[in-house]
Length: 457
Picture 1 (cartoon, helix red, strand yellow):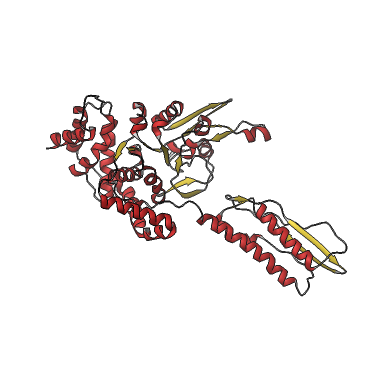
Picture 2: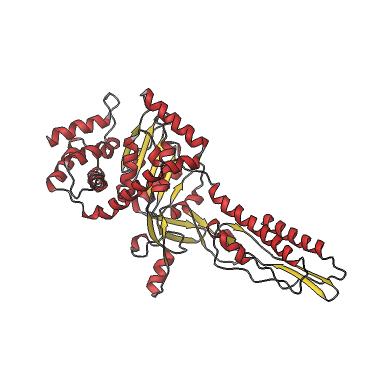
């Protein structure tokens, strides 16, 4: 705001320097604000300077540029800034250029702000950690798998890999302007306002947007996560209104919790409730509202810092174990790639652009063909037999293994699931569901593999 006001003031002073005024008049002819812009930096006010010298008059009027301006719409800033002039002098053209140059500089600053955002490490550039990457890709292909829990040593790229998924996330249809990312076609993931409009037969606009990735910080309050009463509307309008929280923003997207094993118990309870039902119910200061909260829950943590509650661990569809790379050549490659990225992120990202686009197309193709992938009844029976013989509680293990195997087959471009697909995903689907035996020395993933080959062969 200060930037545009400053530039406009500079333009006004420049004009007054060219044409000194003997009798001043009040500034007038403020132009109406431009409309249609909805996000970004805010600009307010306008500056009008009226200067007289005899019968000549020069007036500069810079209108309200917009209520808000986004970097993507910054090119329209020049057309929104209008310079009204009446009866100029021979130097008037030079003054006009000065005003437009100032505004053009502002355009360049807004365009540069998008490029100055924190660069994301490309997913295709992640070296090793194939198990973690596969679990993340399968959850993007089929969100109903239920998320992934990533546990491993510190400094193994867990957070970097999860956040690098942002570039690969596909676009989905949402109702324009809806805070809950409502699906215009599926009532199960529609917010209360959209459902009311449908019941009244009203129409609404639909847009395509990328799947959200929402970070849940460890220090977040329950009100910020669940949503609370809108204090601003309560004070200004005297009405009770709901202000959506992070769960509303994460609907139909990804909710990422770093160091999830350190999350406070009351937030764990909130996540358990929403993950179980797919809905978030808020009771606050006379407000009672339920909205959809179906998200892919991704967590990461270091097992040395504490165990995760079994109830929450069971809500993660898959479990990936990440270890420190032991191969010296591979470690050197990771260090060199990271150094390249830190030195020039833009050039590094550009070098992996083709790989990223290829992976995006592969994900989009797998998502579209997922519904056509089938799995034989015999294979389903064997999956359930493995779960039963491992004493897995409940049926989530059976369901997730079937879903993950179908997603993997779709990722490979196949229309049927085979035993190899099941062998790849079943350790990640069942490892964290086995009962812990403190005297057992063998890894739980190896137990699952042994039982798989015993049943399938």
